[in-house]
Image (cartoon, rainbow, N blue to C red; front, side):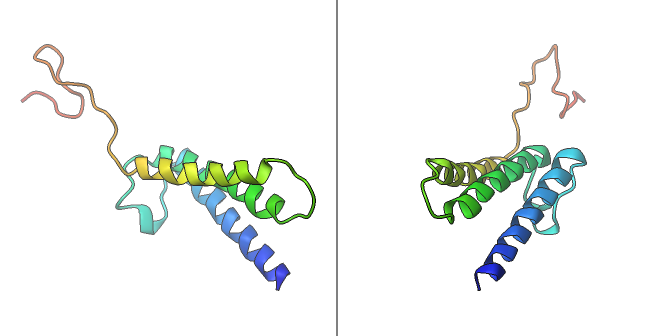
Length: 109
């Protein structure tokens, strides 16, 4: 049973890495997240950080013995990445529109 859980955990982390690299390099998003995520690069970096945290927490936290704070750091990285992924769903800041300098996203008519 332990082997099955390790393989499933490795597959989940592998899928996180593939999705994160795809989002950072090309802007590709997995189908469930395409409609909601507005900033794919930020989401991809958060996904990669979450994968590192999951590896530290899942695979080092399960080992017997004293490993120090690494599993706790991994858990904090994973939870922090979830917060950054939530921020990736919000629109980024756009420059304020002034009469002299119109916004690049909303050109003056």
